[in-house]
Image 1 (cartoon, one colour):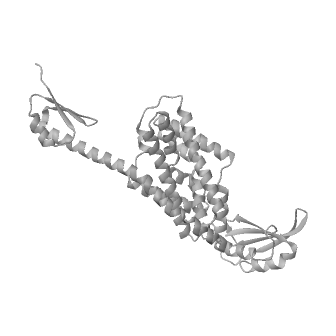
Image 2: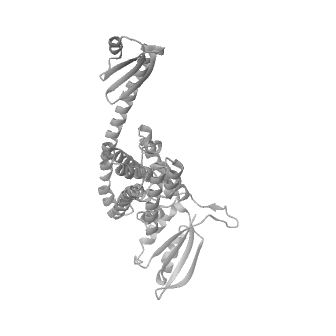
Image 3: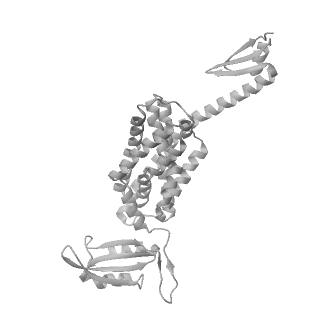
Length: 386
C-alpha cells in the first residue's frame, strides 16, 4: 500500500476525484493555499502496483504540469472495519524507482566526503593488511548508487539521467584512486596478502559481479536501503580503486591497472545485470519520446559488453599464464622429489632458471632429460661433511 498526496487547483476537484475513485475509496481532501493560490490536497491510499497507472491518468488530464503535484508516501498497512487488512508492497512503483534514481544519480557534498573518507580508510586498511578496516570502508562508500541509476536510465530511456549517473560515477572512480594515492604517500608500502586478495580474479569473480548487480537492482527497487550496504560490500568497488592508488604510489603500474580493471569489471557488470533485472521487473519508457530515447541508449549495452570482454581478456590471459606456470612448477617439484628422493634439499625458481640443491653425486644429464623443461636447470651438489 502507498499513500498519495495530490495537489491541484480547486477547479479540477471533480476531475481528480473521479480519477482517484477508480483506484480507491479511501480518499480525503482539504483546502489549502500554495503560493497565494487556493488549491485542493487529496490524500488517497492505493495499491503500490496501481501507482504508475494512476499517475499517468492524472498527467493526462487538462491540469498544467506546474499545477499538478503528486507525492508518494510509504504506508505500512491499511486497517478498515469489515475489510481485510492490506499491507505495504515490498516492490516500489516505477515512478518511485525513477524518482529514487534521479536522487541517487549524483552526490551531495556529504556523500563526496564519504567517498574520499572511505577511499582513505580502505587504503590504510590495505597497507596494514587489515581486512576488517577494508570492510568498514566499503560500508561507508556510496559508490554503487550512480551506476544503479545508470542501469535504470537505460530501462526508462532518460539520457540526461544516464549522463549525470556516468559523470558522478566516473568522478567518484577517479577521486577514490587519487585520495588513496595521496593518503599512503607518507608511508612505506610493501605487498601483502590483502593487496594480493583484491586483485584475485577468475570466472567466479565475474559471475559474482553479475549476481551482485542483480541483487543491487532488486534491493534498490524494494526500497530496502539497509541492504544496499551489504550489496556494496559484495561488489567491492572501493578496495580495487584504493589498490590502484597504492599501486601508483609504489610505482607498480601493472598492479594499479589490474586493480582498476577489477573495479571496471564490477561497474560494467552492475550496469548490465542491473538493466536486465529492471527490465524483468517491468521498468519501461512511459512515453513515445522516451521509447525513442531508450532505443538510442540501448546502443550502450553492446559497447559495455565489448568493453567488458576487452578488460577481462588480458586479466584472464595473465591468470591463465600464472596458472600454467604454477602447474609447471608443481610438476617440476614432484619430478625432482621423485628423482633425488631424500637427497633433495630444495628447489628454487628464479625467473627462467631452476636451481636444485641436492646432497651427494647424481646424474645431472639424466635428470634434465627426465624434466624436459624449457628453462635452464642447474643442479648444485652438496657434499656431506663428517
